[in-house]
Amino acid sequence: MSGGRKNRGGEAVERLEVTYRIQTPLFLGGVDPHQAEMRVPSIKGALRFWYRAVDPAYTRMEEDLFGSAQAGKGQSRFLIRMETSSLKRDVIKKENKQMLGKLKKLSYLSFSLTPNSGEKEGRGYLEPNQDLKFSIMLRPPAKGEENPPEAWRSVLASVWLLGHIGGLGSRSRRGFGTVTLKSWKLTGNDQADQWLRELPIAHGAESMEKWYQRWLEGLSRIQSWFGDVSTADHTVIDRQASFFYGTKGSKGWEQALFQAAEDLKDFREKNSWDRIALGLPMSSQKRHEPKIEYKPIDFERVASPVWIRVVQAGDKFYPLFVILSAPYPSQVEERVGKRIGELPAPDVSAILHQFADHLRQQKYQGEGGR
Image (cartoon, rainbow, N blue to C red; front, side, top):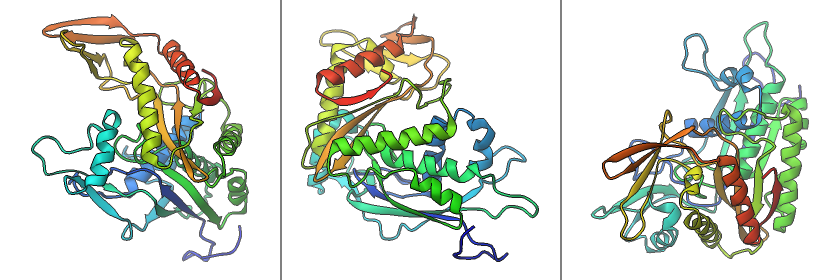
């Protein structure tokens, strides 16, 4: 242990201070969708997601680390404190012409965020280009117990992954709510501080190539901590995961996101059936043909295994595609008018390989198992 603030028992407080940069508009709220609100459960849920994605033995630590509603499981092992009063907020409305114009241009990705016909206001959001700060503290262990040493390592991996390929809020898989790890500092635990120093922060890289190399270096280190993930019973970063970045930088986040939208749209239009591998439920309709709806069977929904993110390197912005592995139903329901049938699900792995090839054809750079 190192020195620093003390708890009531006189022991040093183990604390991680994190600063994320909000890169794209972040749509996250509570009961009122018109009021943007950053909440601790949202941060904790995102960290839990990325921890599960990288630790093949997550069941051993997950409930102890993040808590559980099940009887006898108790609270999470760490506390999050956040300062949100200084965050700038706004709402999508007709008077907000600049942001509304950007979202309309990005309608392929943002269709659920803009006001519906007859609505005066759309979703509330946290503005981009500002810092989101919070601290994470491990709870003091019960008398006679100790915090497991890997607890901090799991938290660090989650914070790092969220700040490099993840996002927060609505449409985070489609580029909105991108948060970038800007800085972090850990006090009260020398071993955990050493683990932190093993993970490079890609933010601030002067080129996209250097950003990408830092990303690969950090990911490799995290995977050395936990080992290989082999079972995709949830979204995971396994040997099949791929990461591709655009080589043409843009002046703003919206241009980079628009480029990603065009490349995704182009693939889906050329692969009308295969596109259902990128998320369900989904509807499709060609001119003069009836509408076709596809839904998963035995699943409420299937989230897309393809994430879009905006990366800033130097003074330019670049699109980043993250292709992960996730479970998919064996059967798909097809509804055409009143007719309902069941079809074998497509070969998702093969389709994601095709999508990776599509990105390469569009001059994206990257690597991975696809």
